[in-house]
Length: 170
Image 1 (cartoon, one colour):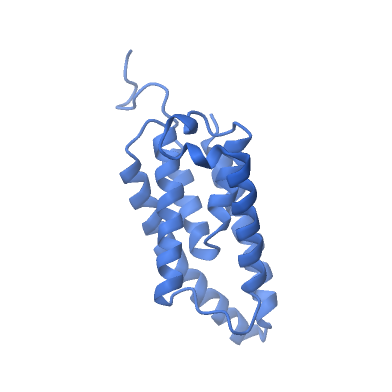
Image 2 (cartoon, one colour):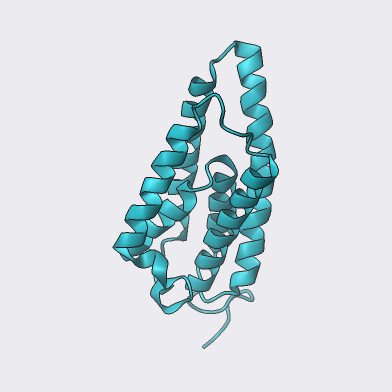
């Protein structure tokens, strides 16, 4: 088979964008990207993921549990005692889920999962800090209550996550 512009045949050129986007979503809501990816994979929308070490994400049971965890996180985020996303435990979880979704997308596309994992984790790290400071700044400047800022973040996370997945479908 012939390579086109240094690209292996069959690879989706948008996979890095998908890993970056889902990684960024992990910085906003850590469980939303694995839930979205798992739901898409369980519907057969992520080609070849079943042939990778991340094939468990294609299970309808995994999709259900990850969705339950994502909804729980979305609800808990609005509570006044929720820890900051840039605290060590929260940041570690965001990096882990960013790495997971990035690696899974890369592996499903026949690429090196480690590269996708690094891309997803770095994107998650950047988005964690950016979204933290944006939300706090908006709350201070406009006097928004914490739950209102959280609802805006929920909408951004879901929209960016769905857009990122759409870009990876080939």
